Length: 269
Ligand SMILES: [Fe+2]
Image (tube, rainbow, N blue to C red; front, side, top):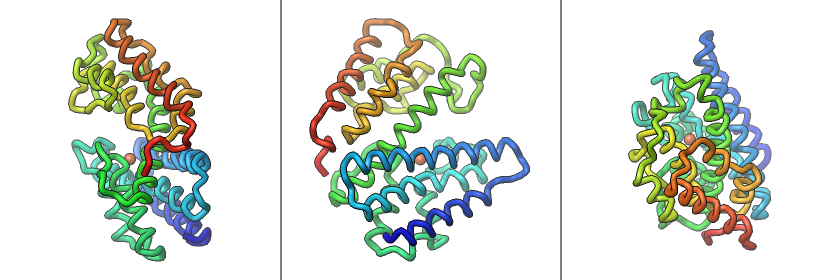
């Protein structure tokens, strides 16, 4: 991908998104939210690319995967007035469809088109398929880490304002009861990420996000998690039970261990 092609693709994003702003402040707030998120994910992916010394061509590809990863969010909101995939559609799949219908990537090589489309398609998948080509695998992992870093920051900000705005849709109508799901705690003990189906309370939601430390791929990502104290901030307000404390400590151990790994990438692609 040349820098000229990258600039054309960036311009397309701006033009496409600007078409979703209306006279409705609620709609505009939602569209702006996703636009801002997109640009922060682009900045995160730049940091991660630098940490593994990706070549300039691949940095441009990674940047476009970040720019387009949530492109499906805009038509999703326009059509369903929600960002909840469970009650609307899979926004990743919709994003790939949008790019195809508009022939956005047609100026790129078939290989680059595939790298970008697959990265978008799997950015929100529960698991990454293990039969992917090594280069494809790296782009997907970069995008997933860059996306999580921003979601953590956004959710920590929302949790800190919970008392003022408990009805905020980001809390998914979850109850503020003190209970924590045994299945989610077990997932963290076992060093794996928890499942959304097991969430019943707001505490479960926080623990689920803490469990994401077991689905990260790059040393640089762990370093950012450690520097910004994401786990400590998510853990604020969780009940001081023995099980909860042990789970948080397990997540913190993972961050501590993986942020000091010498290799720049943890999982070989
Ligand atoms: Fe997404």
